[in-house]
Length: 196
Image (cartoon, rainbow, N blue to C red):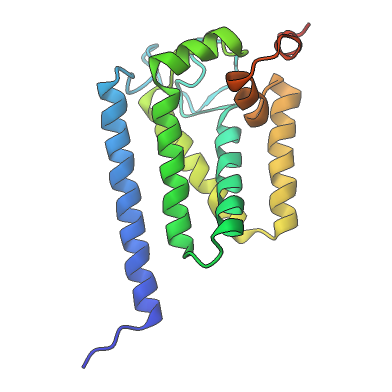
């Protein structure tokens, strides 16, 4: 009689979680394509890093300044899910975190949200994400989750503050500011973001 061990169960669950993540990411890619997003930058090239924020190529390449906000999303997803559902397996929390990242990529790339970003935030040139950028945003979220899982709590907090602080310092934006401005725009903040 074969008895399954806890290690075998964990391995089986990990395989299911990874399979589900890959399947939902593929579904996201097809949905974004159906929504009219380009596979790569409309410029016809793929860059590893897009440094210029005030550019139509922002969110079109593999990584840019906003990649840091997706790493931060992963750190926060791990922290929140672990705090409120500590008995849930890490694989389940990871799957929920990835689902939240996928949901955001869908919402972020709707015509309504793209238009709102252009009107009320610093992202006046935002055209939506290319599909390659959306996929790597999800990879960045996964990386943040993984880091939070393996770092001591104080280092996770320091990393989160460094990421948000770097974005604030270098591009006058970040996860907190872009979320706030999208929901409740403040003219004084917007003027500061443009260097006023």
